[in-house]
Length: 143
Image (cartoon, rainbow, N blue to C red; front, top):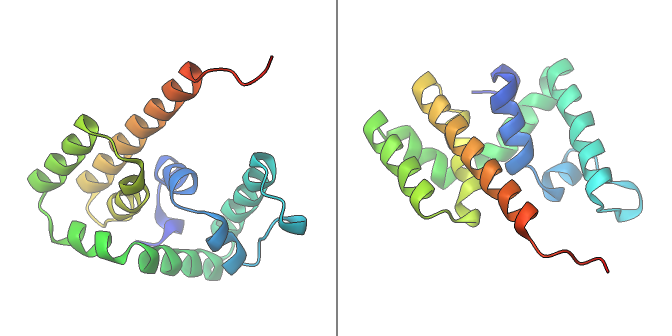
């Protein structure tokens, strides 16, 4: 399913978890002078999101890039039934691993089956909550 056809929540999850500097550069959206600050990345992602909404070709290119990047996970998820999808998302919730989450979120949220996409949203929500909790509980580096 094209990123252009996803609901706002699904698209937000994908833009938050799945798109990194490599995709931004491949789409011609590298930040000025290699600037990798959070703010410049956020601006580039916001701009890209608008392009995906307004330009079919950009959304198709980004969908293709993410399908290729996460191909192994996409193929596995496409073969799963709903019980297997629920089992894998429950398993991740019990033992979260950051390296698995981007591919799993893309595969789930871009699946044609609505219940699978809903499982992807639940997973993205849990990962976001976990990340926020870790950020809040992290020791401060300021004096």
